[in-house]
Length: 243
Image 1 (cartoon, helix red, strand yellow):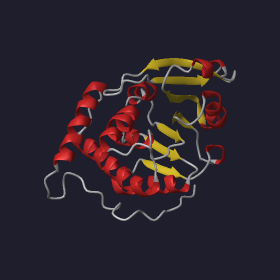
Image 2: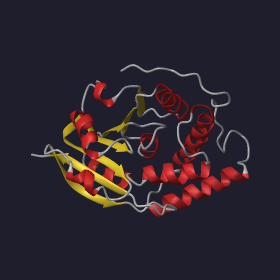
Image 3: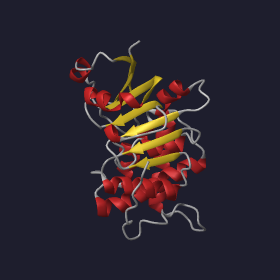
């Protein structure tokens, strides 16, 4: 698997966190409190090091976003609520899929700025997380973020998922706003292990998309996600191969 390094925007490297011998700013304290309340609302406790890493990711994403337009969301506060918490809301469902497995691998398709892949990799360092996106600037950001956050369990590739070659299939292939369900299944099913799952993160209940699913898969679960601080509908579609 090849990767391409992009020149970071000025000031994007060496992202500061609350450590490093300085006191956190008022804004950093506010973001940390917002994240803590959100994680409590999700019922997803994380150690301090993981929470700090998530906030460093938000700072890095905000810096790169000023130059490379990785996401339409500009405000760090909304990055915490609309990106971090929204992505982490899928982790409890993935925990159930991972239960009893000695190892667990996740492929994030159309990862963009690392969503949901980077929050998942931070929250579950024992899992192996691969992120793929065909856009060079996004792939470059993923590589930089993995390096700066010290995510030894994560990797990134700049490919269309249809062109991706991997040594083994994944336990879960997940997407967030990648494509409609039928297109997601067509592009990603070959990357799913025989007992694995396809997981799609959606907004409103995708009735029309469900009706267009190919016969190769069936819906195992349709979960309503309650994401703290977000009023919009969130659903998680968990699919598996038909036997």
